[in-house]
Length: 121
Length: 115
Image (cartoon, rainbow over all chains, first blue to last red; front, top):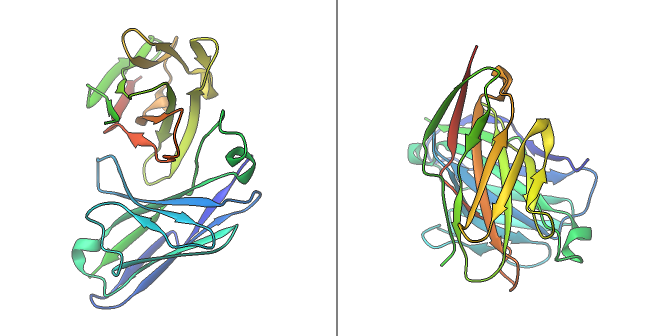
């Protein structure tokens, strides 16, 4: 089946530093990837939609200069949290849509990565 | 505006009993509907989806859901719950038409199956 990986699975960093999280689709190509943030016992909050070869579309209230997204290939999107602060500590999850499904709009699902736990001290 | 409601924060059920996790939605057009499950400190796993056709959809791990257009609901069900079903369940919706590729998520329902 479709597999999405994230690296690292967890990271601890000091306040003021930057952290890069990778999201890869392992056995399919994805023109669109999504980045979510999840707080404990809360729902997913969509941060941005990442499109291969173009700029990401950020949700209202998400700082694009703080959360840099790059989708350089059909299998890789990265989220960089710049100048991280303790309030950025969270569980970050990416998901990807199979390019094959993009061509068939009658069927649609997202495949999720296992998530990355970020702790900023 | 699109929205999804999961009216119960928590559902408790005894092992072997049937379970239901409720979901209602609001979209302007026809919906795509999804259920995902999240185990602790894990990403989400796809359970099932309704796109078109039969209103009763069968998915992974013995789960099923029924699309009810008149009640705008898509409740998740399982005839006999297992302790291993204990997890966080999310309902999501997307409009079938239009270019908006985003899923709208419910707040999640924590399912606890007691032995």
